Image 1 (cartoon, one colour):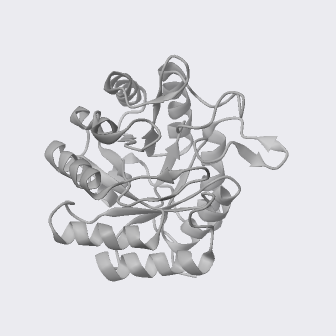
Image 2 (tube, one colour):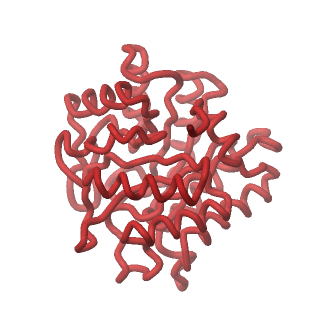
Length: 282
């Protein structure tokens, strides 16, 4: 186990996503008002990054920039300093519509740099769209979070960095537990860490996200290995097999407990911005 004692841990809360509904868990925030309230609770619990999707009036995923703008404004008002990360994921739109919110200049945005299988479909991220999204993030000063569903995605991010398509040190997130994609495999996880350190440097920050039952597993692996952790109702609506999670804040609290177990302080928003190379809010 890495010597991680005393190293601040950045907690990201993925508040809504594109799939979970009130039928899955009544605590899933759907409206912008619900999302802001849920994010504030998670912020108070220790989260310093909010990973955001928005829904339309029917609760279906959308890339509507106006809704993203209202959500961003609400989080900035009620969670001062919190890092706002908007999703450019493929369930919410097609083609360049996926990046329609980037002119809002959020602190960060997700960037999937390659395709992979999802439970019932292919998650398509064609090279021309990846290049365009990366260029838009550069143009608007948005730091990408590289969502690595596969080892090749980490290598692709390095290639893009070398070409100047990504500014600074990429922030890579390992995503494990998606059905038909990479399972929660400890040997692969450890190799991901070694790959990030080899390509981007020993001090390069990285994060991990587990889907469904893999969430708490990846939280533990990340915190104990010196990385940063993502949690939230987007990825998992349960505390365990028998209990629904009562809130995003309750899932954040599980990560805080792991930080205490491994003697890592929870990064506040100032520390998180320093770790990720982000400016303080205006």
